[in-house]
Length: 69
Image (cartoon, rainbow, N blue to C red; front, side, top):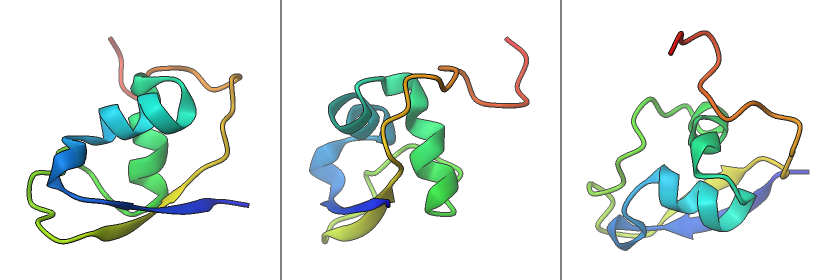
C-alpha cells in the first residue's frame, strides 16, 4: 500500500525524495507517475503538498521506462 508524505520546495526534487524514501534517486519517476507529475522539480511547492510513495522495489530499473539512454 502506498505511503503518503508531505513535501515542499525544501525537499528540492523528486530525486532527493526517491533517494531518501526508496533508496534510489533514479527511481524518482515512480513517484512522479504515481502522482501524475512529469517534472521532478519541487521548487514550486511553497506550502506542503501530499505525495503518494510507491513501495520500495529493488527489482525496478533505475532509468525512466521507455527512455533510451
